[in-house]
Length: 260
Image (cartoon, rainbow, N blue to C red; front, top):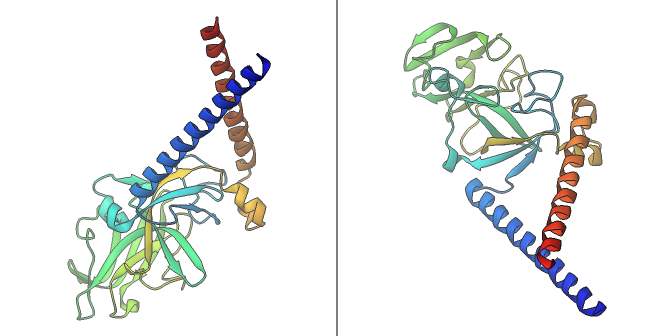
């Protein structure tokens, strides 16, 4: 009888493990299919997108993980295009894109997309109807040139310039900037216009705090982790364990009632 009971318990445990593995596999496959790119998760390793000193759900903070989609699947709506429609992602207008430069992946917001007209001027979709505070030194709709000055911009009302004449006359691309930065990536010399070939993916969803585990394990930028993230990470882990234990107890009670 004892051996029979043990065999039943082992068989039940195996069924649970196989079912859980199948469920996880199906979920992972679904996420991979929807994402359309690999890897589909990235750990945020700097505070350039933060909106405050503390970690906040819905904002990209150091130690968060972002789930991304391929650009061909998601498309990109820039800040100037989204401003009039009200479309927001991660606490501000427009999409956040991921792009590669040598040795690094950058996760910043797409501010505008500039297309060269071939005569030193630029076509910038959405700029003609942009309702924010904008000054420009030269050009006209569809043939922009000179310097664009954005004022009262973003969640913190900052001011910055986009020097169109300094962009040259090469391929079109995105002007990008971290929400927590005061200047564009282009003005900072981090990258030129972010071309479609440089763009990896579009950030779609945020998993808060979990990426802190990787940062602590590697010792990378741990000084940039928000002060409230470690506690929130511990609470999250404890909550997950408690939920698993509670589920196990509940399953045990259900089985006990069935035996009765």
